[in-house]
View 1 (tube, one colour):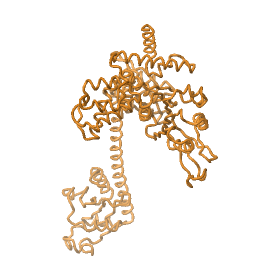
View 2 (tube, helix red, strand yellow):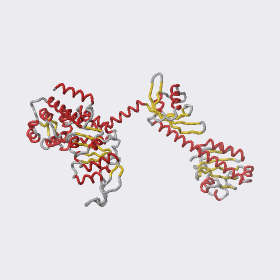
View 3 (cartoon, one colour):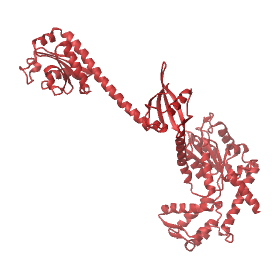
Length: 584
């Protein structure tokens, strides 16, 4: 802290002290610069002292120092004015702030009258100087407090201007105390001192409401109209005085942010390879399903990408920051599946770990668990799974206490669960609990344009993996791939391309360099080269739609449910049904 920062105040106090005591006064700071002084010394104001040994002693002792015989006392020996000092007496008193000496008030006598007044009542003089030192200390402290408050206030205003929301502080009479730049922009004003009438009416309308929490108000102006979302909070209340904080947001801007956020989230789904209308409709459906908490049942042939969709749904859901755990119910032996899913307590069975084991459901707590090949789950485990869905809790094998969990279940199957229910190997009540949001992944043969996209994607992937430079497929090879039924769907296509890369790693894949490989790998008899591709696709689509309609009828569902299973709109379903009825 530097007394120089309040020099004018220090000078006023020095002059007042000199007027009262009729003794010359000087006040120095921690650098021994004369900040204030009276009488003839004023010609040297704001200069560094030449003889400052007394004041240094005040700083060292942190208490008053009295010099009755200047120039001849021990402290004066090293001074250049030793035995030649013009002063006839001196008292120095420290100015202390928060335990630190920041300056000295000095009383100086230059004649007999001043000397008499200086020493005739030393206790009174010291008391008075202590008061003046305290006054100076408080003034300096106040200066820095105000400066700090000013800096803090500037920071707050800067922060307010960085906030995306409009922020206003107003009193109960709709008079604005403070507002940020965003509020000015939203309200269409430049300064808040003279508010337009439409802004005053808008604020008054908000203040008239008792509770305002994300409530929409209309801002009416001759040139524009805006819908604003407003929240009101009381930040100060004393007697009849109130100050309120209003936050305002433009509805259009909020909608824009929400749309951009949705687009950002959709990117993960867009990364699923495929551009056909069918697969795009499934992606859009999957995004909507991801925003829900309900269970999802994904149906589709083997290799269509059910787990890929399950993982992506998790990535675009509110659970994305927690675990995604996948379990293949058909790949784990029946006697191990229960402990794998639900965990076990120590000593639950022979060979069990002494520490016990956490199950997949506990690992996925807060996240998503993907149960692939759900149709292979044994009946007794189906009962336990049904309890998880109903009660949101599990019980470890060999355990006695229930463990609450928060897990979203996505199940998948390539089997017809309706038939399994009829055979008595799948519980109907579990089916309905799993099938809250049904999804059907269309087979690859029903969306040939995706074969082209997938080929490009896998060629790029395997070029990198094999350090190869394959340019793609010639038209005749691509025609074979477009006509091939791909019973193993995307998985089969990927494996086939990997197979070709083991033998061809440069240029285009042609009938000449890959014909034998294709015949060895694919069932060429499955191709019917005499019919146009478009006829084959229409027939596959017709069969797929008929299968979906038959499925919903068998399960006593509305025919509209078939559209959901197919990943198409209701209008598209009925249009295609009508088309295929007319074709027969």
